[in-house]
Image (cartoon, rainbow, N blue to C red; front, top):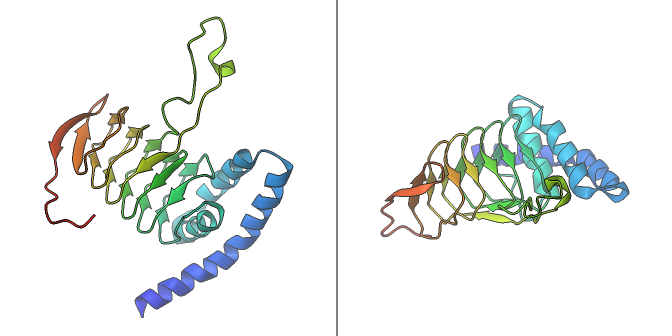
Length: 200
């Protein structure tokens, strides 16, 4: 009964989000699609309480590829790229900044987490040219299933399933082995979770 009620509420908010999504698509045709997406993300991030949580989930379900509406996106959290995929059961805390990424099922992000679109967003090899004029590359970061990313962490590389990123950690190298626990700046491995018998 409870699941049916929850699904009904989510379907209602999908309908409520349709005008936002329609306006977003229309304005995207007239300008920069990512810039328009950021504007709508910033606007929706300001809506407090359960209304904001359900409306954000509905909008991102419509606007982002392969994104579930069974997600929770906290107050003042903004997305910078529409090419972002958020899977079922994901929790993203307040005041996060989410770049181009895929976040796997049941992963949790604390407050103030920054997911960057890779670590090559700004080139800086030519000292004679301002950094802002040297361009860069946006990469889609992959964060696995069942990860925990602590408050104020910064992630700019792929993270394997079941990994834990300690609060305040700066992840500059890809985490390949599942169940890895890292901490520090730059993040280094401090332990390994016992995953024997766990389905992936």
